[in-house]
Length: 456
Image (cartoon, rainbow, N blue to C red; front, side, top):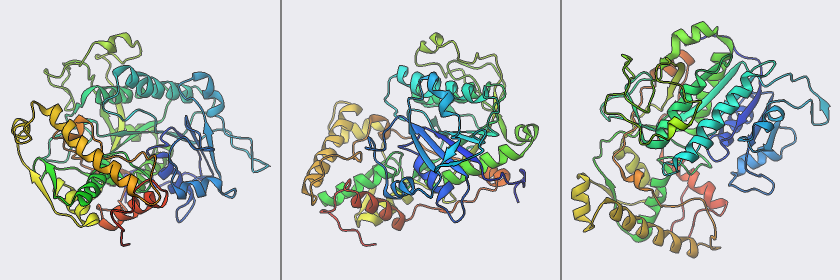
């Protein structure tokens, strides 16, 4: 039994902000297409068009969206424009030609933000920080604010591989992206009247999703099957890369909303809040989460953003890690990928300088360019050889330079289990599930089928 409230929120009216290419579709499926319906109505609001689609929509989601018996609405809107917030944050008064008495959205999930590591800082400021803060302020200003406002964030932090990091662990935001995602949480924690909590997920994967740290490995594995070569991973086999399925991220988001909505705020803060320090320069605070004196801003651009919460302001926010039970490592992930494609795999456990020498390159960037060129060239041939040929797909073996760095993802998920009652339904990455994900993309003409016929 969890420490949190045992009360259950009656079927809520739900708004999902952003996340069409990440978690919005899995979350909608979880709320509306599971064993029991968990929402009275769900609206997804994002910048993409769904008719005609301007981004990939998986078949289960398309089916759900086109089923008139399912209370799901998609609204194309520019959430960066504050003028659109009033209508976006107001539930419909009529649904399926019947009047409804939905006064407000009881639960809002904020899935917005740019997850690209190599995006310019001004993009992170506008598409992540300012967007999330503007939406939160608009929600808090409603005559009847939501009972729960749940933000999804990712492991954009530098982590050691030795132990699972708790929510209050001393973690350094990783690069420009990490700092602005971190400062977004600090900003949300200062919005008065907002019943906010945060879910932080491990390396994620799931049906219909192609981002994250897991599926790109599956793509590269297919390339090496096509090339009839052994797949080599950089660094050591025991490097921890903890994982989580999108079904279980959705579960965590739902449980957090129910907990926040049905538990007194004082109890929520006592049980689950952690302090989030200022990330742009050294902190003089004594928090166990504080940044060391060497942790400085990559630039002074943050000084031009007047809404950044000052270093002297103490910010706390309810935060939960969600991670599966497998304590995944490079080896367990490599073994799963190899199982999908029937290939051999190994590890190049060397320092970057040695790797550059082994590849006979001038520097690390040149080595990355060379590896990507080989992968992309083979993938292009695979797409052309598919029947029918694949002209366009968001799936690619191309990896930015950051993906080649030695980056652990290592989380302690015990608090979510203890407080929220979280229990992963997919406790580990399974070969059959990776095959199902690939098969879904193949059925939709986004992943080549000529080089390998999956046996389901």
